[in-house]
Image 1: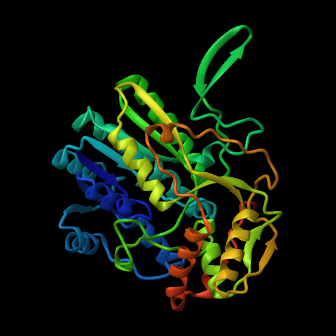
Image 2 (image 1 turned 135 degrees about the horizontal axis):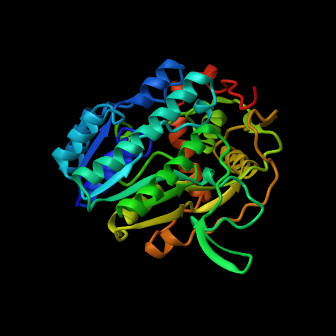
Image 3 (image 1 turned 135 degrees about the vertical axis):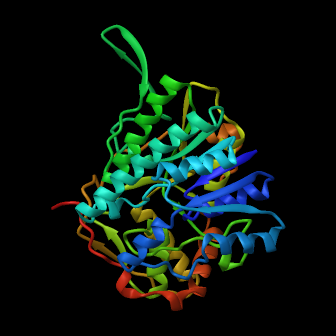
Length: 383
């Protein structure tokens, strides 16, 4: 089918473009390079250079013989969004086109304003573009498990049945976001649910946990096709950061007690999940919520995995418990349901010793690109 990927230059966006192309879909990737610009502005470039979208598409064509079409422009601009939709007439739309970092959203007022305006503005434009140009298209929107927070009950898959004063109803599971970025994701869900009810849109909302890793079936060992490996505390996800810290000889930066527990998945599994959602669309007027993760780990669990992998590869990895700059519970109950994607056919990639060592070896190959000053930036939630 024709699949439009909004945010096709991102950490997951470009791997998704290759993955869907490899599976026979016609893909157009659109992006305005916002992530690249913000990385430059705060001096937190990735571990190694990443070609631009046109270059990536050319490299992918050489490797696979398949085309990924590219459009560069601002999806928060209705004129550009409308032009892309009218030209491509997608059958499926994947929405990654948001400022993707919780720490960035908490930097200062300017960063918060950009996050709020961009994320909600693009989502609003997507909704109207689907309604006007592709009313039968299925929207797959990337949410986050961070929308739920850490409630003291099991986290259901998007919806919860409640009995109150003798009556029953089905509601979206309560959200309690831990950053402005996560709050914009909650607001996205509310916007989408409104327009699903009002305009009979077809939407799958993926509540994704933190993703780790770089190499996929499509990249092989070619670093030019790999995504951004950010290792700073602004754009780097925790396990990717820990691996670079281990290679750099920097103590692993565990915040507070390290008991913060979340659901994680390998980049390969994130691609599987998105493809399964695309290839199994919902009916008009339906909002399907899928909790997208494979395993739950505490920060201490991840630090231990990196330390053990480092020992196997000859690295002396230490851990430093830092005062927690975030406002979050460091010890809590966490038991989210995640059956929907397994029922659609997800084949998980657990974080085995083999997978861990493979990722750390890849990081070691690029150790000369590490700039130690970028590892800790001092972003604080509290004022």
